[in-house]
Amino acid sequence: MRHALHIADGLLPDPAGLREQLEDIDDDLAQHTGPNTDPEDTGLRLTPLDPRRPAPDLLEDLLAGIHGCRLLHEEYDELDDEDGFGDDEQTGQPSIDRSREHFTQLVREAAAANHDRLI
Image (cartoon, rainbow, N blue to C red; front, side, top):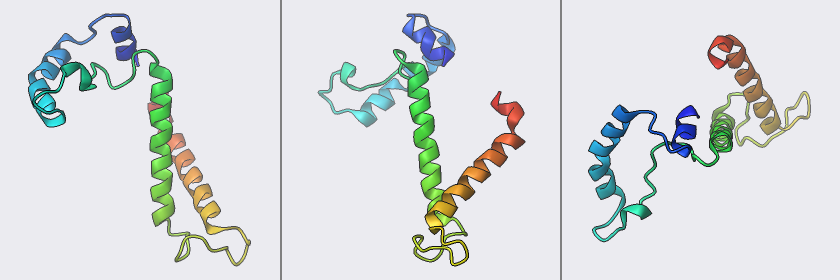
């Protein structure tokens, strides 16, 4: 986030990193463009976050990543029945809801176990 804010302010926070990016730029341009493409149309950025709105951009990416992880968890969660949409015989709760609750529980446990790395 700090890097994106420096870029937004017109500062170059990591000259060595920029050198590395410039060394690889020909390969990136060749991979993502054709022979007549304007370099301004490539969308290559100096920072992975949008420098005009780094915090919302980071949050959107984080939420999309969590959503993707939840979808994978629902697909492979051992609590789900065969088709993933049946009801639990004992509670009457749809298995998809049980899978979401299980995912939430696992995320909270991981966050609690790694609390010092999150702050």
